[in-house]
Amino acid sequence: MQGEVLTVEEVAKLLRVSRKTVEKLIYAKKLHAVKVGRVWRIPRAAVEAFLEGKEYREP
Image 1: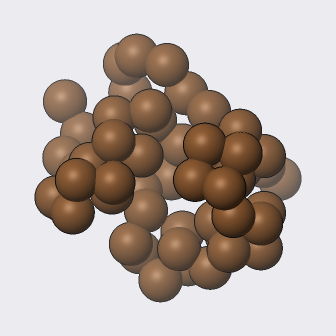
Image 2: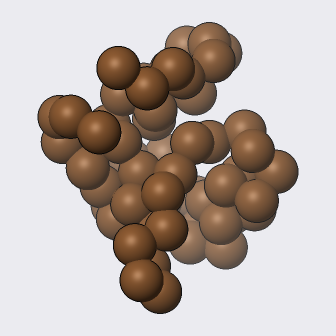
């Protein structure tokens, strides 16, 4: 993974939704994320792809 990586909290603020909503998007595989230990990390490019309605592909 390259580029900026965001936390669930940061993505929730960007999307103006709750943490739970972001987690639901991750579990539904609508938002790409990687679990590091006990926490999720989301590439900024994945958030941008989600907002554009596109599928995220890792570089």
